Amino acid sequence: MSFKNPYPDVEIPNVSVYDFLFGSIADEDLDRVALVDPKSGAETTYRALIGQINAAAGALAARGIGVGDVVGILSPNVPAFATVFHGVLRSGATATTLNALFTANEIEKQLKDSKAKLLITVSPLYEHAAEAAKRVGLADENLIVLDGEGLEKSGHPNAVDLLAPNHPAPEVSFDPATHIAVLPYSSGTTGNPKGVKLSHTNLVANVAQIQPLQAMNSDDAIIAVLPFFHIYGMTVLLNAALFARARLVIMPKFDLVEFLENIQNHKVTYAFIAPPVAVALAKHPIVDNYDLSSLHTMLSGAASLDAELGNAVAKRLNLHMLQGYGMSELSPVSHLIPTDSRAVLGKDEPPLSSIGWAVPNTENKLIDPATGNEISIPEEGVSEPGELWVKGPNVMLGYLNNDQATADTIDADGFLHTGDMATVDADGCVYIVDRLKELIKYKGYQVPPAELEALLLTNDKIADAAVIGVIEEETGEEIPKAFVVRQPGAEIDEAEVMAFVAERVAPYKKVRVVEFIDVVPKSASGKILRKDLRK
Image (spheres, rainbow, N blue to C red):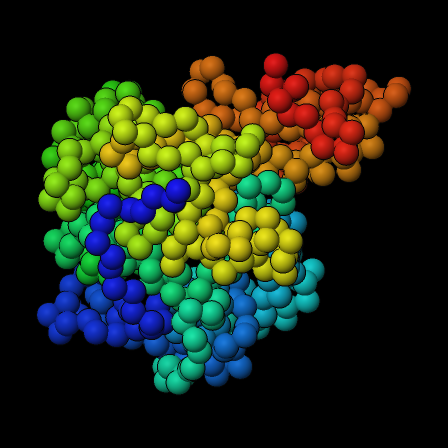
């Protein structure tokens, strides 16, 4: 028996992301500050942002980019990200966002798979971007370097070249429910990264679903340190904050001192973090040097937050600590502890060890993976664990060019199988307890073992390899560990294995522990028996 969320349904309009966020903006909100660059002090109002978005959409249309085309965006958090991201969507094209830490190989892989016709980046990432663009055959004029020297000097257009002509935004027509707005890449429950097809309706729905629970409003200042290229930052920061007419204080990367300074100097009220940030806030002595009294709410996501750690942060900073859950395939938020459970539900707030209740307009199932039987909400206490299944308007359209992976993830009834093991209590509140899936989560980033295993096997000195996640004692973080079988007669040590991987992947994917073994345990079908490696 499935169980539904406890909230009343919310309205999900059948409109594009642009129309949902900006189509009916009130006159009094146009001159509110939307984006703040704390480094330069520059501020962008909603009026200016909308103008820039329309100009970017017009520039793309003038280049022949529109419905059916894909544009890559490779950038850390900068104010211009909002302009080009929403400009792409406004033009009718699809945005595929790339991790700013990617190597040229990883950029090439995503550009090729998504068939991107254009790549937008920034100067610090130019070297890798240019190499990847060249490999996939993108002409110089189709690599836009927002803060670059410009078309005349470098052959690459910059932001001025893009926006100065002020081409009118095109008239576009598409079905928001089926048209792909964004193509983030996710490993899903297993395997190599796949393009996640998220429609305009998926993104609109998820903002509509979380808005009454997060209760962000135009008086809030949000610290935007979670990357916009990641679906968490894309939805809960960029889109949800803009919908609320809040002010985004943008940070390109996490630096504890700058994070604390920005909260203090810009009177930040609301912060979205991943668990590693909570560790610093709970333990680092420098935190006491800053006035963080403006901060009233902090929400952790991207990986499980230890309740004791979360409560320590809440006590130290005198704020309300919450937790949520989601995945790229869910646009991403499927569960959330509301900012005020009593006001929206008439219920006491659930424990911080939970992920809260399913968001509006969704339903869940818990399935015993051994029997396939459904697990019901108990009359008291907490249920037995089962795989969490989610159904709702935020469930992705599917994986790009991978019908089998889509069918393996979304069943005929529309339930997405998360690969995470969960329990549910008598109140309908959900707790993540384990993972069925093989994915390693390092500092909130997804690290697919299959990708690292395939890379290791390209080394002539390695006969076989397997990768699992293990807990690092010093930090409590999950880290990638490689089990390596040497080729007969080959000499390779731990440092050489780690260096080989580090040279070819983004920093968060690096192998951090190596153990040499005689044979990788496998099933009769050839599947690696990771449970044997964990013993």
